Image 1 (tube, rainbow, N blue to C red):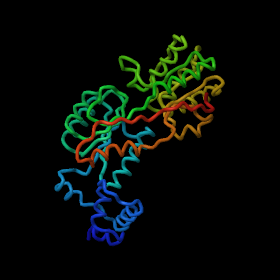
Image 2: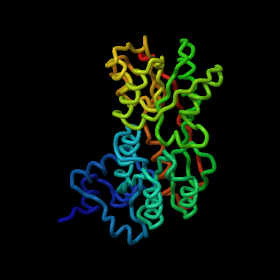
Image 3: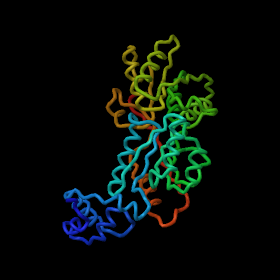
Length: 333
């Protein structure tokens, strides 16, 4: 027989109303110790709220949607998904994930969200497939949304910004201060197709401009480890090889370290290498990876923005938070 909320309440020694407040995520004052007792009792009994009945009563799905540019392989996306799932579990929501790795997939994702598959969406706006117009139009439907993006002109949703450009420029200026002049940039594919540089690529070009360095060595390779290794190996085989590599992802930078060592070059003696993202793997590369990125990977503040919107009687004004990036110098540069 399916366990009931009353059984959870009896085991946790609380009222049925308190069980409802805790498991629905409603913004009611429930002590942390009481909340933990309820969650533990629900876990022991295997109790989950009857989402179908709840949805009929509230005209809600009790689902939220996570929209990413790819599925798997990006450590920051994995942490974002983990933190969102944990917060959703505690509030009685499930999570649906959509990938927008092409223009067609972006339009399909918007259609699905317009169709009411979820009560709200957390969108990590990487790449150019999910355009500003698509996102703004989706927000205009009233769907509660939080968007991770540095794009300008997004309206009707909460924004989470990461000021990458200046941190990346600082990393390149660090390389220039060492006398490096042939600095290659391993870019994400989407960075190469924009009319004007932005984000990490803009940080690279800005630093070179500031120091009067005209040569640009810009190539794809940051999207996966194999492509990064092959690209770095080819660059390092050339007679006028770069003396530094700045990669738009830490995964690519670590592959560049491997390619350098396989080519018989020392890091950072022959070639200095810097990545972006500050993933934990950079601490166990040899040498440890210099990088730009957040000092900690914790997206609970981002997930909380979405649940604040979902639980509000009236949608609050658009909010914005900034997650700062820092240049971290380690052994590879």
